Length: 422
Ligand code: ADP
Image (tube, rainbow, N blue to C red; front, side, top):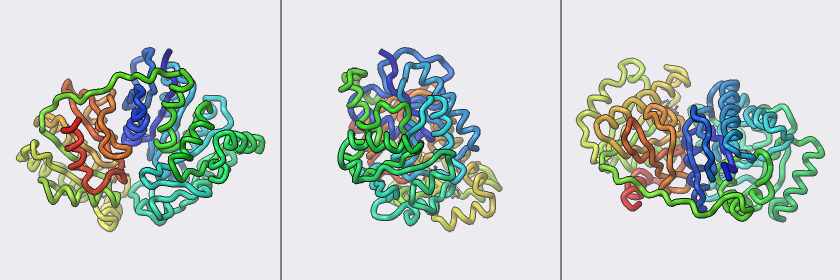
C-alpha cells in the first residue's frame, strides 16, 4: 500500500486543522510544511502538504499547488483535496478558484465540489450562502479581515469571477436525501457542463453524506470538516489500515512563547483574556516599520519563559486600517509577520520549546522561520487546532498553529493545559 489521499492546504493553520480532524479517526496523517525536497517514501498514510499561498499572486499559488500535486501523485495518491478556509478567504482574483481549475486540469477531471462548511465551528452553507454562526459571511467579522475582507456571502457569486467554467449549486434538500441522490445531482450538473459545484451543508450529517458521495472524485475542495469522514471511508473500503501508531507528546521543558498576528474578533478576545493573566507585549506595525524590532527583543530578553509570555500585534479594525493607510496593506502585514517570526526564533534560542502562534499568515511565517518541515499530530486543543510535534534547529518542540477565528476565549490557557494533560 502507499499514500492513498493527498491534501494541499493554502495555509499552515488550515493544514494542521485538516490533519487534526482527519487523525481524529485514528488513521496516520502526515503533515509537511512546503513541498518536500526529498522524493516520497511508501507510507500507508493520508498526506497533507501545507503551503502559504492564500494571498500569493495567482501564478505563484498555481505553480506551488501544481508542484505539491505532482509530489503527492508520486507518493501514490489517487484522490486529492484542495483545502481552504471555512470562511472562503479569497479575492475576486483567487486563489481558491484558479488553483482548483489548475488541479482539475492536471488531474484530467471536469468537475469538483466546494464545501467550506464546518458546523462544529459555526460555519454552515445554505442555498450557497455561507454563515458564520448566525451571521451571513459578509456581515460577520470577516468583512474587516486585513488581507481578504469578505463582502459577499454567496459562494457562487464569490467563486464565479475566480474561474472560467460554470458554477452551480447542490442544495441542502438534495444533500438531505443522501449520498446516492447527491451523486445523481452531480452527474446531472456535469451533463450541463457545471464544473464547479458549491454544496450546502448545515450539520455533520451533511458532511458525512457529501464525503460518501464524493470520496472517489479525483479532486474535492473545501474546508477541513468535509474531509473529516474520509479516513473512515478509506478504512471501510480497505484502502487504509485503521491501526495507526498513536503519537505521544515529547517530554518538553516548560519554556513557552505565544505570538499573535491575527486581528480576528475571536483572537482579540483571546489576547485580552490571556494578557490579563500573563506577561504580554503589544507591537505596533508603524513603530516596527520605523524603528525595527529592538525594543521587543529587549523585552523578550528580560522574560521568564516559564511564564509563557505573549507578544501580539492583534488590533481593532480602526488601528489595522490606520497602519494599512500609513504603510500599505501588504507591508503592514509583512512587518508584523517578520517581527513575530524573528521573536519566536530568538525565544527558541532562549529555550522556548512550546510555541503557540495565532493567525494563518502569522503561523506560516513563524513555522517557516523555525525551519520546520515535518509535523506529527498530537492532542486537540479546540476543534481544528491540534498540538503538533516537530524538530526545529535540532530541538524537539511542540507547536500549535491557530487559525484566527478558532478556539474559545481561553484558548491560550487551554493550549497550555492540553499539552500538560497529553
Ligand atoms: P487570521 O488567521 O486571523 O486571518 P493572519 O495571521 O492570517 O490572521 O492575518 C492577519 C494579518 O494581519 C497578518 O498578515 C498580520 O501580519 C497582519 N496584522 C497583524 N496585526 C496588524 C496590525 N496591527 N495592523 C495591520 N496588520 C496587522
